[in-house]
Length: 146
Image 1 (cartoon, rainbow, N blue to C red):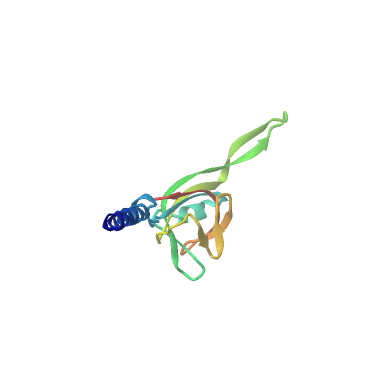
Image 2 (image 1 turned 90 degrees about the vertical axis):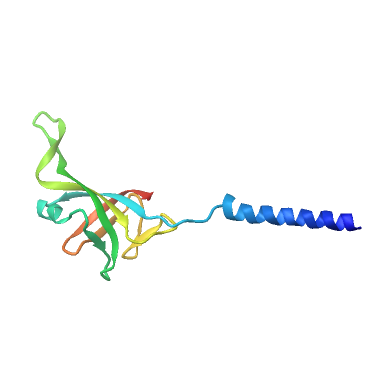
């Protein structure tokens, strides 16, 4: 009788240990991470493009800092032009510029689901963003963890 009781007790201890270990180490715990968003801002005036700088904060309608600009690539916008012989060419716009911005969330998150001014930030979405001095429309290209 003692052997059966001892065997059951040892079995329960082993089973409990396996459950504790699997819960903590095998399943893993959701860790917080920052969300990095890449976006394009097309066909804007040079004054608007020049007013957006690395280190600027994207703020929501309440003035809260949601994202910080960590990278900026600027180039002239490209537009289609039809030649006299009917060919369509892609040429640089003489005035307007396009930006490719990389921004990082200010607060860590457990998911790649973010919202900005009550609009869900999703790949392909167009969202109106604001800095302290500029407002522009960005198209979301990617969402990544950092």
